[in-house]
Image (cartoon, rainbow, N blue to C red; front, top):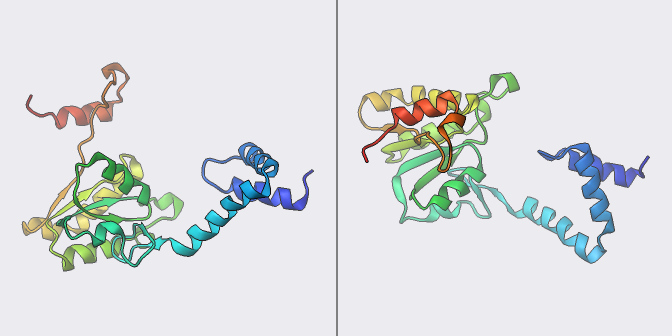
Length: 201
């Protein structure tokens, strides 16, 4: 139906997460309507990001150097590591301005059904950091879903000897009710955690 070049672009765009064939087709037609001066910067941006952006050698966050800006910032708390699944999670936590420690990006979560085991994530590097650096707390901020919970449990079990020895705390961000939410719409797990994590007023 389409020329080979157009079909190839549709196929490539369809591989992006959240982009189905129809959306890929709309994006392709939009790009075709653009002038070369407007379309080429997008192509160049893709080339630049693939050539210059890499993973931090220490925490696996995105960076253009060997170490990311967080790892290079010696004013941050060097005794705390917040474990997240993806680089985007680092940005979300940084926006809160509530955390001033280090990070460790796993690159996903454990999901045996999808063929993602411990060897597919940066878990070994996390455990090495905890053992070799002066880490006193690991905050496991994986997503509150089945894969995230399984990953959190795996991390706790691997670090159990250090926890038992009293040299390490492993914590998880509190899960509760969102601001502006109604109790009647909260699921049982969220409501249960909100009650468990209640605090004094």
